[in-house]
Length: 262
Image (tube, rainbow, N blue to C red; front, side, top):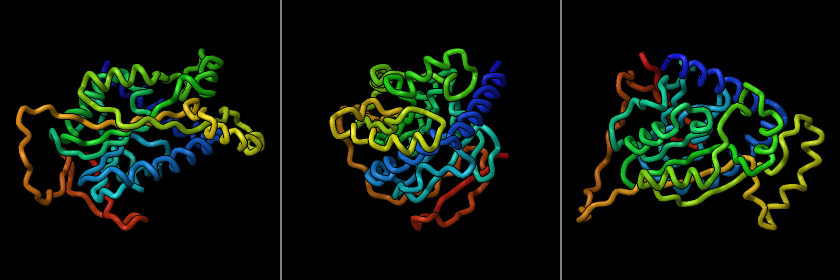
């Protein structure tokens, strides 16, 4: 049963990558990158993890100032850690930032995913969750394609209230919620280009109708007596059963680590 679930998740991940190569998907992806380039530079730390990807070359965390970057997928894509978000191959309290593009949208056990995120994040660490907004043009389109068995329409479009409730139960504090993608998912590039004016709706408070919603949440730890932590340099963190990484230079000048499972 577990293997079947993982197989379906990998299938939907591939379908989602294909959808993001369409005219509507490319525009949404471009707006997502622009938003992340404003959000991530404000989140610091030592180790950043990206779970999943929208294309083979996707790098959503390239704009992060964190130097140690790890990329994880369900399959054995080149230069990534192959693992399930239901059981992350990292020790407790080791990651400073986790970016999750559509991880909950297509997970059979979203609560378990969030428990794993909480386990591996350090205290005061951040998670950036990216998912489809049900109160948007994407949400309306899902109603049209309700019988579709393909991504993105087969995914779960969770409301902001439900996500906030889940995060609150795990002692996450929602720091901010952002939205992108006001244009409808019409697969006609010319029509998409003519709809640039819709972005002006952000100026009159309609940004919450964007097709994607981004949650930035911080892991909180409640202690009776706060203890000062000595400043120390962390050693490079290697996932369980993963070989030593090779470093490459990113366009931002940081050392980016990608690893393969055995």
